[in-house]
Structure formats: C-alpha cells, structure tokens
Image 1 (cartoon, rainbow over the protein chains, first blue to last red):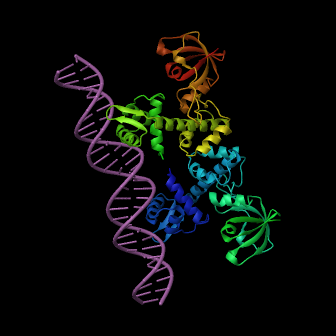
Image 2 (cartoon, rainbow over the protein chains, first blue to last red):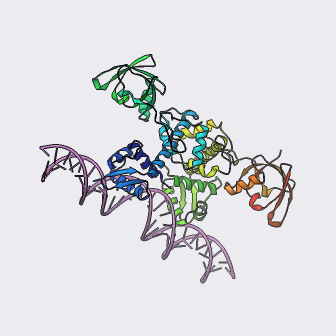
Image 3 (cartoon, each protein chain N blue to C red):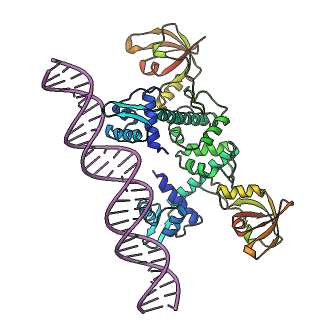
Length: 220
Length: 220
DNA sequence: AGATATTTTTAGATAAGTCTAAATATTTAT
DNA sequence: ATAAATATTTAGACTTATCTAAAAATATCT
C-alpha cells in the first residue's frame, strides 16, 4: 500500500510529464513539491524499487503503467472531492484545493465510486479539469490558453491552470468564472497584455499572468 | 498541529476513561490500540509535553481539557462522516467504521461544520452514538444495556457498543437494527442467555456476547 | 512482610521521510 | 575540448512512530 508521500510524488511526476510517460528531472520534482532535490532522489529510488517508476541515475524518472494508474486515481479522487465540496457543501472554488489535497488520500474504492454516483458522474471539476472515470479514462477538451488566442477570438472559459486562492479570488473580482464569455478586442505588446470584453459587458486589460492561466473553448 | 497517531491516542484515552477525566493505564491503551506498551509510554510522554494529558510515571495518564476537546472533535468528525456515508452514499452501518477512521483526521473546521449543516445537524450516528456539536457538547441518552434489563422489560434498540462488521452483520441477520422493539421474555442462567421477542414477531435466544453490546431505551 | 507476578519504563533498533553539506556527474559556454 | 556552471547523488543527521528485550517499579498472594 502506498503512503501519502508516495502518492504525492507520483501525482507530481504525472503532472510534470503532462500525463504522458515523459522523463522528468529531479529538480523539476523538487520545485513542484517544494522539497529538496536530495529528498526527491531518495523517494524516487523507493518508487523505482516498488515498480511505479523507471529511474536511471542522473537521467531522470518516468512513470510506469502502475505509476500512471495510481496518479490518475489520486487525481480522480481529488477532483471528485472538489466537486463534492462545491456542489454539495457550498464551498467556493477558491477554498477547495487544500481540503481535497487531504481527502484525495482516503483509501476506499467503494467510497470513491459511491461518491461519483452521488455526484451523478461529473465529467469536470469546479476548475474545469476532467475527472477520470473508475476505469481511469478521461477526455481532454478542445481548449486553448487565452494568451494564445488571436485578436477577435471569442470563447468561453472552461478551465484554469492555477488553483491558488489568490488567483481564483482575483478572477472572482473581475467576474470571470467557468462559463464566462470572453472576446479578445486587442493584443498589446506592453507586458503581453490583452484587452478583452467579459460577458459582452465589461472591458478589461489582462496581463500574461492571467492570460496564461485561463483556458477557453472556441464559441461554436 | 497534532499528527494522526496523536489524535488516535487521545481518542483511545477518551474512550477508556468513558469521557471523564479518569486515569487510564498504559496497558489498557496498548490493548485498545493494538500497540506495545513501550510505544504507548513514548507517545504519552510526547502528549504530556504538549499539554494534552497529565502523566505520572507508573501511575497512568489522564486527559487535560485540551485533550478532551481534541478527542471530542475527532469523535464529532468520525460520527458525522459515518452519518454522511450511510445517509448520502448508501453505505450500510457495518461498512462505515474503517472509512470514518480515515476521514476523522481530515483537518478543516469549515469542512466539518458544513458537513454538519448538509446532514441537517444529526444528533446521533448510524450506530446510535451521540454526535457532539461544534461547541463540543453532546447528550447522553437514557439507555441501558440489554444484558442489564429485567425480565418483562420492553424497549427500543438505540445503540450498539461494538462497530465490527461481523457483529453488525449478525444483528442484520437476526433483524435487529436501530429502532427495533425488543421484549425480554426470560433470562436463563445458561451462558447468561436471554430469550427475547423482536418486533413482536420473532422469538430468539441471545447470549451475553450480544446482550452486552446492545443499548435499549425503555418504551415509554 | 517477603517472594512472585504483573505492569511499566528504559535502552537500543528500525523504517519513512525529510534536511544540509559535500561529492560527483552532466551540461553549457567559451 | 576544457573550464565553469548547473544538476544530481551520496553521506550523515534528525523526527515520528513503532518494535524487542531487559530493567525497574508496583501489585498480589500467602
């Protein structure tokens, strides 16, 4: 049985390899997890012994199938719990991440499947991330970062890349949430700023720290 | 911040001292927690240093107010989660204990209070145990063990003392659950057996291993 | 009260997970 | 292609939570 720390490392490696079996460096993991590189090396050796990752000294680490499976399951749990917190307990989307970080490590397949059913098998969580089904499958949506959209593009917010309270509250204050319609009026050179209209109403200037974290789906 | 192990020790001490500030022995704790006495001594020293318990070498341990408060809070969480699992996720009462043992250690006051509200502030959990409110108060019901009832007594099942799957499934097979009416027809000497009628229908012989674990409330 | 039994504590070990500091390997830049 | 910079690993230490075996304290029994 995996420990919480082991699950968190697998989750981080999965995140850094974008879900694929890409090689990830020790430093990238230590950055992501806010630990020291030496700790990462230790843990990776343990995970390699248990067969969850393929590891070559100085060459980085790659998830094995069992590692991918575990990471996806933790992600499924995290996102289902976030959905529960928002849908059933009236939490706002900026409050749920740290609580779900704890809940995602509860061990019970029956629990997570019943929770899934209780929530009516949601496909996406409150931040727009896809929720893997019990068999580990999930669909990546047709989405594009706001920062990569052209002038005159119109789309709907379907996800965010960062889940920090600060960022999500900023989005709240400028009235951006999942489902918000965004039209790009202009792209400025100044700090890669983008002038947009929100829900056909408010005109606002967004800089790259926002536009690089907002996913849009093209409007039909 | 308390670790899971520390919370579990406080919970065990609370249970053994029947909620009161009674002194508990090292061995009693090691029995309850299925660890060795030496481990208990270690942990108790740590809890004493942090102020949760009063400890005198060779004389046992007693919860301080902060220890009682912590234990009650863990109990509140355990019982609310059990209620959630049964009421909302359709678990049966014999499945929820081990899952709640995990969930009771999730740290978030807001979570537990919102869960309480979502469940509509239940007073008792699926095993009939009282659920402490947010301020730590809870009511002990007027209840008596079946084994201590006289002949001709009639009462309603309001709680069970043991939460193991085996025991609860046994109660299921003999059609005893919370709310079941029980009338005592006779008390036999043989293994302290008791002859009862269940819900005015089924006559059955219960031995002490059952009667010492079933709480009844007198019928009016 | 003294011998024996029981309980509790101490001492030393182990595993997980982390750290710092130093050593080593790899990459980059001239 | 070699020196400098960067990345990674090793070595050794610490904390938490556990264990076993031995020592010490307390309780029990005649």
